[in-house]
Image (cartoon, rainbow, N blue to C red; front, side, top):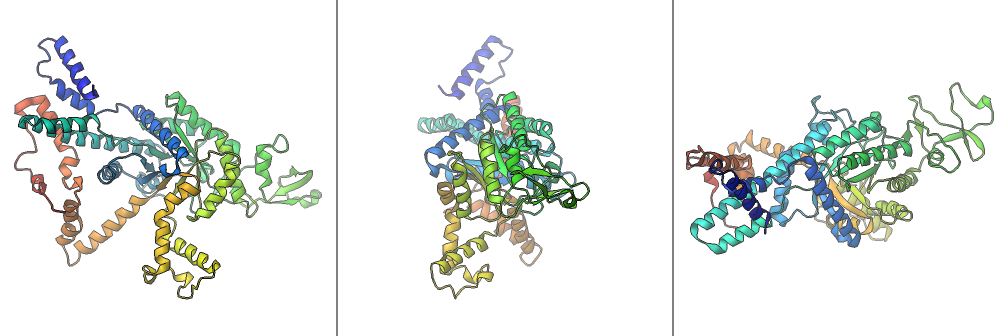
Length: 537
């Protein structure tokens, strides 16, 4: 018996228990409303989606072809349309998530206006966006199920039992648009208690997966900009613990923590940890510091700090701002230590922020990590901060040059030129970009691929194209040809924007509540009916 059928029976029994008082209640209508509101709370969502992620992680361990993907979004509507598109084009949401980018929250959702990615935005805006995303995803469920219920009624009215069984099967096996969200908590927005409190709000809003980075919270920078300052391991591990406690307190026992390291591009630290014995984690961290040997007090300036390392006294290089500098070319070793330590202390997945999308570089670090943590898996930022075209064309150029292939037809410093788009080099680079996610999943341990800021750029690009034509010679044709006609021909549900915003759901409810006297918006004079046209493919 399906949940839908069971709910009809249960409400029917409730109505009977009330005698004639509930005669106006339709058990099937009540069951439909239940189906359209499957998830009652954010914790329901977090528990459900955590199970999905854990199953997907296990599937990836069994076969790296089972990697997962997501796109970043900054509004509930954007997230909703992504998952509607995924179901439309691919038939299932399996392996497809959403990513909530702290960068986009800062740039697009702050009451202060556009901000850089430096944790200056209101931290409450992060759980608010999670809640908003799931509100829109649940509405997508309600809308799609509402159409199925109308199809069921039409099949019954026509006496078409075959169609009725088909629609009933679609209802019984309906796949929700509610998917996991990988949610960015930046560096925790304060100390470990602040991290715990914010993590709770994020989980209560529906987050099953929280990504946290090892930068100093009040000096946080975008991972692809300069000036990054990392924290000692014990400080970062305290925040990982804080997130885990938040999951456990709220009953999301299999919540997922992504530990992100920015050490590859970070050359500074704010704090020198206290070492209790040689070889402990603090002493290993301190060994990465750039130091100079101290022979006597004469080698020290007023206020200098002295460390004992390897039986010698050394002083760390301290900058005028009080920060300490790491030795050059230690980034990879610090990344490996960060990742191994995080996995050994409660993290589930890793995120290594890199300066370019280079498969060999990522695989090299992951192989070192897996020497100590064999099941290490990555979340990787396929970032718009990378110039993908230039990077991959240069990689192909360099490979060809190393192999002795003639590259005289190409200028390495000008490979962005459109002149190279259809050349052998350009096409090979594009093929490598196309297979990058699959190749990296197989060779570099990347379980989840995401693009942090895609809709920031797509919104800007589509708006630029529309503005160019609409305010130019094309006028209204710029919208009609570039937007609406394309929506109709490609079957975008959003072309009926009234339906997408919930108008038909509201009509259904009015009919449930008021019967034949319901004043509905979907009558013959609704202009949305103009889009009920069949378009030949």
